[in-house]
Image (cartoon, rainbow, N blue to C red; front, side, top):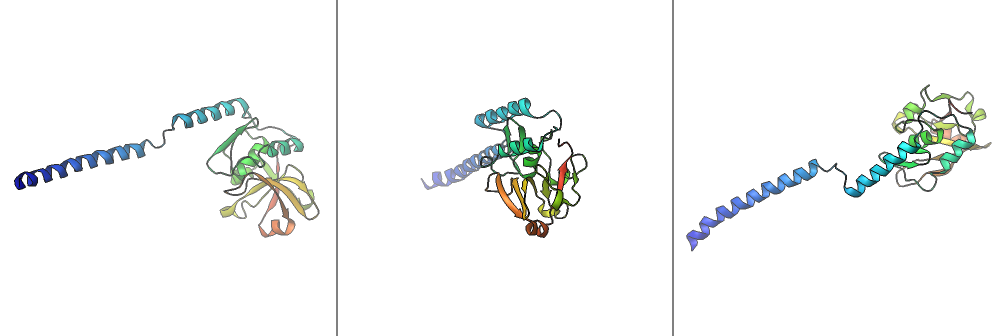
Length: 199
């Protein structure tokens, strides 16, 4: 009996090893195919794709300042901040971060812009004496002065003390409205930019 036990142990170990290898292979396979969307996710991706195809602007839009604000307000209190996810509604499909939010409000064709590209001549120009001349539909940004912490927000209203902005500003929050004083803007390295195709 002892001999049988001694004979079975290595066999059992070998079997366990084979099972372990097979399990590892399955785990690797699962990891390798981890990017494949599940049926529900595929349906969601398909829905977003259909939405984008229907609503995404074919070219950068020319909008009034009031239209920009209307578009921006469609996200307020609804769309969570994310640098990965995209939100699609009747205005198009855009990334759920600060630059995606402003891109949507401005009616850009591209859904993948970031603060560094929004300040390019293709889309905007700096506003001279911006504290006096900034208007509804313009934006405040601290790019490139603070490239490590770039941010851009749409101006809803200018006051003598600062500006009310509409924005996607941080993880764990939804698109929101916030007041930024002139002192806060100066301390943050902000300045004003104007969309090239504003009416």
